[in-house]
Image 1: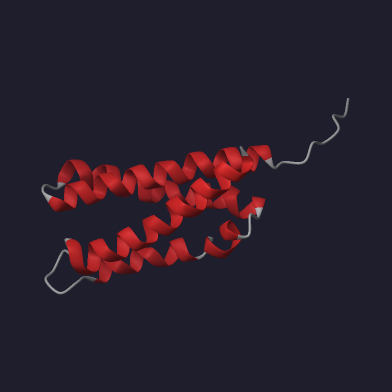
Image 2: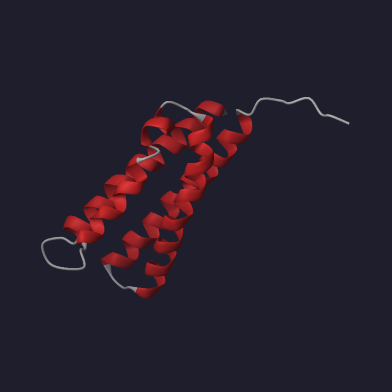
Length: 117
C-alpha cells in the first residue's frame, strides 16, 4: 500500500508539472506563443526531490501546497471553455490525486509515539 501511494504521488506530481507547462506554453496559453503563467510550475519543483526520495515531511507540506493548484483547476474548469476547461479539470484531478496519495503516505509512514497520561 505504501509503495502504491508513493508511486501515485510521484506520478501525479510529475504529470501535473508537465501538464501545467504544456498548457501555458503550447496547448492553450493565455496569449499566442505562451504566457508567463507557465511560471506557476516553479512552486511544484520545490517538493519534487523530497517526494521522489519519500521524505515524509515533504509529503506533509506539499499536500497543503497542492491545494492552491486544485483551487485554480476547479475555478478555471468552470470559468473557461474548450481546451482550457479540459486542461483545468485535468489539473484539478491530478492535484486531488497527489493530495490523497501524499496525505495517506504521510499517515502510513508516521512513527508511532507513546501516549503520555
